[in-house]
Image 1: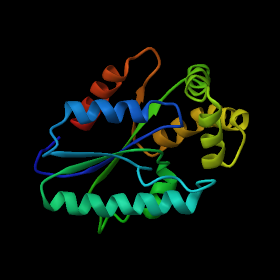
Image 2 (image 1 turned 90 degrees about the vertical axis):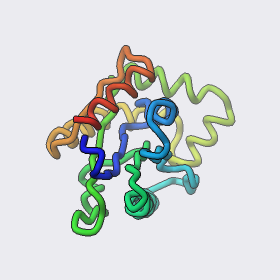
Image 3 (image 1 turned 60 degrees about the vertical axis):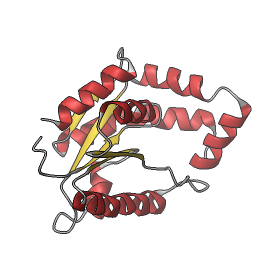
Image 4 (image 1 turned 180 degrees about the vertical axis):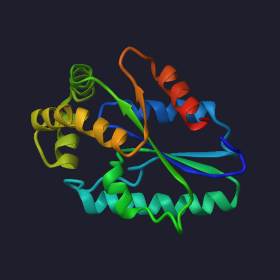
Length: 181
């Protein structure tokens, strides 16, 4: 990666693919004066989330990235981004260069991760509030979407990092390798 060109990177994947764990490790690995590493939904998710909310948050972070670029920083956003939806919000003539990186996980590992994460009444209630569906439907919907999302990333020429069998540190190192080309 040319350090003179600032970019915005969206580290994407379905819920449970490792975005938050990767974010934690990227913050430790990358110098904060060069990279602003953030969580897409750090402002919170309204009831049911939805496309309008996702588009508004994506636009917000694209604008933040423009400001960061003026200070010589690249921006990394860890949160769901679908290249087809992203292209409706992204304005290449106005925004800084963007790269999307998919964290891919097998459906079986995804289910295990989501069940492990949502094992208290409080966490089940929160995911049901944010997603607008039951935990069971949330898990099934995400499992079904894994292969579709990977195909969308491939069709749009974006990179994929496989997360199965890797520690969050290993995944983060692979993400940095993709970022540096």
